[in-house]
Image (tube, rainbow, N blue to C red; front, side, top):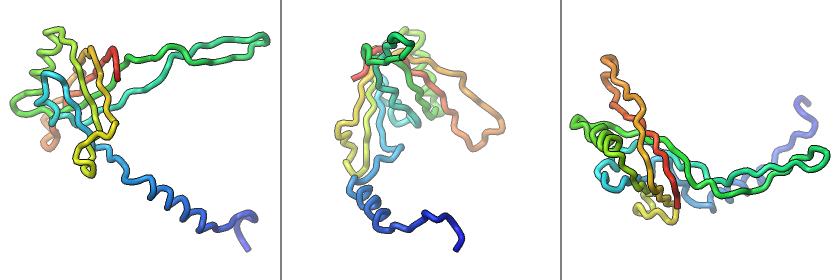
Length: 163
């Protein structure tokens, strides 16, 4: 007999894992989201990628006698940044809005929510509101060889509060 001496099949174990996964329900698909920038609602349909930023607290470090390190929770880290990619239109809607945001020194409120088809778009509690946000635009690529690619401005959102 070849193989490992301690190998055994356990189909019942695998089936129980399958059934637990099935019982957890339909999984949220990465494309099932909706993002709204207050005052720029027409951009929502042009958002292609985004992120839910980290949720954490600051680390407080202490060293006990003998050099033993100890970590504890500190204050809530409730500000940060995340990336957004949009698809530009031939009217230049995204870049015009970003220009207005940056030149106008605007602070914006942005809402992200899950929008699953099976829930008819109801976020079911998966919603985040980012307040007092600044928008930064990275360099936007154009290329004469990109005959099938959409121009996609990449934005960096810096937020000061999240709920």
